[in-house]
Length: 58
Image: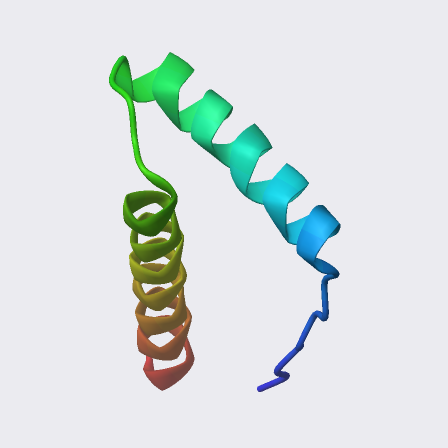
């Protein structure tokens, strides 16, 4: 398994979150706060991590 850490400046992070919030708003048709968006991205990552672990175990 490979782990990647990305370092972002405050401006890069803000741009990333704003773009993500915009995409989320368009797809889910509702507003999302920065905290909610960060949690959503984390949970999505955890979901895909568990899926890849399940596939590896098979």
